[in-house]
Length: 604
Image 1 (tube, helix red, strand yellow):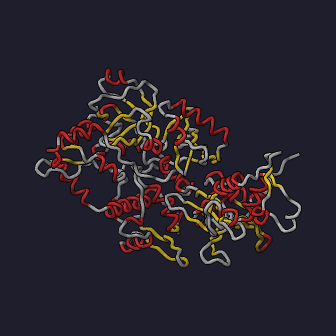
Image 2: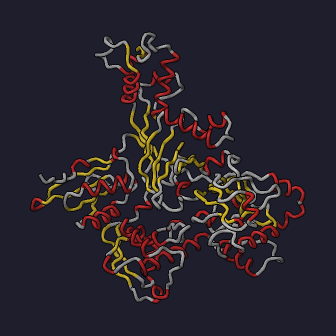
Image 3: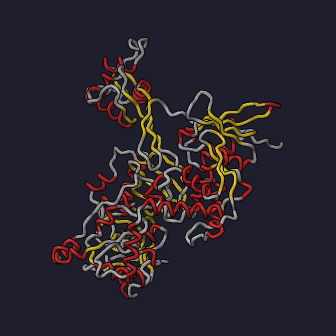
């Protein structure tokens, strides 16, 4: 369900009444949770966001996000836990065990087939058709997938363990997991495996492990280190019998084992693994490069900015389940890679301005381009057209922006009681809780009307102006809190996808859209501050140029060293607003100037 990028429709903070309803629904859906576990799982004071999204197939899904991690998702009014939740509560759902190589296929959108299920000594978990269940890997009880049982346990055994067992909805490494902090699965040892390991200590020298082509977390490898060579071979036989839908021989690569018992195929796998990750990334880079030139880039698009070539063409040709990253290759930079391609007479790159390079010529008859054959797993022509049309929008995820507040000298007396110091940065919820605690600890709530707070000397100095200090003795709660927020120093925290949070002083400047007049009274649309939100000005200009069929240019922003300004002919505020809000998913409050869009004329 989440193997491909989804579109976020809205992201709102849940109210208290909605949180209480969710707690009741969770208790109904997962009765195994105790009252203490439920209070720990959904604490009343933690901020909980409700995110409405649409999958790549158009399915409407609601995700519940806490501390930047999705903990639940709802499909057709049914609640499902995410892997983040199951790592904290591994026994919440009945779990089926499978082999590590199967994870790659599950993450790619496949369902779990019964021949790939490992039968533990205790037997299969007891489930009925339609029950929610988890999927774990041999040697580690940390679930890596969530799905729905397609038949009962009795029916599975009656069918001879053949057919589809679990319809998978969500997996570790899919886009829903990537929406969170991308934590690695913990190692939760299996009690049965621990007992078997103690009884068979003499087999420790023959232990081996799986290494999926997906390059999963190191903990998955260490979690399967208790598998013997005999168990590994039995797992391979299961996969060959159809353990997972559309499985192939490349799904399993044995790791080095006993050299005497290793077969030629295993020795070949050893040689493959001996290659460094940089060499593998170099191969992927070359594959995407030649595939883009042969099937995606057209001669009419030249000259083509190198950044646009990477975003719109090379990334869209990356095989499903793999991630291309130039920084992880031996080239380190795209410019260095393209320079090597230029030395091989494949293309020609020119620097139009400082730091801005374009591909100006491609030798389509070059032997390496003509000899290249696109792999079956590569993107289809339709996907490439969508990638060029959308200019890499699926790759963009809006940053998580959190307003913060710093304690100033004037407001310090109010926060000292809570152990805070000058310059400490707090969230709005922290500010609110500290103020409420201060009022209650000092008995400042008005006895006659609890909606009012008595102003003591500390509050008087912190939140009242000099002209108000002799006239105001009480303040409403809302007024007190808003006054405190206004007198704190503004900060903001920006978290880009896959990066560490960054805290900056001051408020975050919105994306500014303005109109200007040029020669012959022609209007142009100007856009600035795109970089603050992780948007490439050149890519945005390319998208607008293709959609509105108007000339677009990118130039340095006057008065700024590291920012650029996009200029496009005509009043294009309407299409630009649709791009930023609906497709890039930016909140409206961070886009300024949308009111300047031309009003549609209505016929009388």
